[in-house]
Image (cartoon, rainbow, N blue to C red):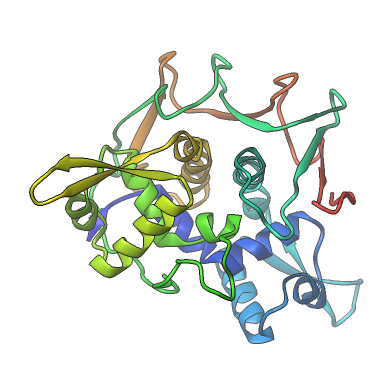
Length: 303
């Protein structure tokens, strides 16, 4: 059992890195099974199972390619389209910190002002940036404990000889990694405290901590000399992941509601309840799927 979290529900719906890649490609215009397979590669059975899972979680839906036709395309549902804020912040974080993605967009143009920009998370009330240090949390009506689903929670995330560099989806599409990062937001920094909070096996936690340290998201700090013991703290790069977590949480609070209400409430320092506005870094105008042009690393327009 672990503390209830909207992030847990969001991660359960989104699945794993393959599911996140599929959602990314759906935002970049893929619709047919063969399009997804051509862009992503991998086993067809893996792609099929992840598409089915995203359908079950109402993120994708199948529609006929043409009226009366038998061939089906996959399209984002309203629930899936509402993941745009999370996705564009994820892409922007990757650009800002040089974390690659084979097909992640790297150029963002806000059509309203015509400028290349990076997406920012701002308070919908006062307009100031949302950061870990400008937000506070308090228990919500849905607080409590819940069993954490463990399907597809991969054991090993360290780079290998075949895949020496971790990509964006390796960091943000792995549930244990995301949960270990989220523990930091609640002031949990030590190994035994994280293990107790998350109910995570020691070898998996060790692997994720090493991954996050290698990626420059965590840094170790010695807090006891004999024997040497360390705690883990977010770097500036790690703190910049916080807005992405906020959008994931608010998405789950809207679409995957707990009957009792949200487990936690977030308040910005202006005193307003959390209202995430994803905005242009140049003009601070709101960003939507309809007013942003995305370009892939090869420079061709994606959407």
